[in-house]
Amino acid sequence: MPGTATLSREVMVLRPQGELDVQTSQPLREQIQDSLRRGNTRLVVDLSEVTYVDSSALGVLVTGLKQARKANGCLKLCGLRGNVLRVFELTRLTKFFEIYETAEQAIKSF
Image (cartoon, rainbow, N blue to C red; front, side, top):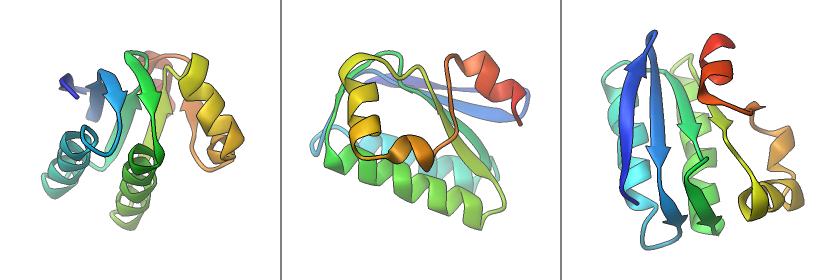
């Protein structure tokens, strides 16, 4: 899961790339935890470069949202499309997360 992490208007934007599965979702988990430890409780995960997610990746995102909320913050998603969006719809996680088209829209929503 190569990707990037940038701070924009006091919102940490994480941009994983490729497939997020049991073998590749650990770096995203670490990025989320590191951001929260540093006091960055407003997080956006931009999934526009992600082509596949499995249940372990969903678990990382759900756990990240819970941890962010516990720290009085929030984790929002953006850029879901294709199969990734379909997985979120089938699991009804679209009702659990705030989801935006773009990172800019997600950042502005804070």
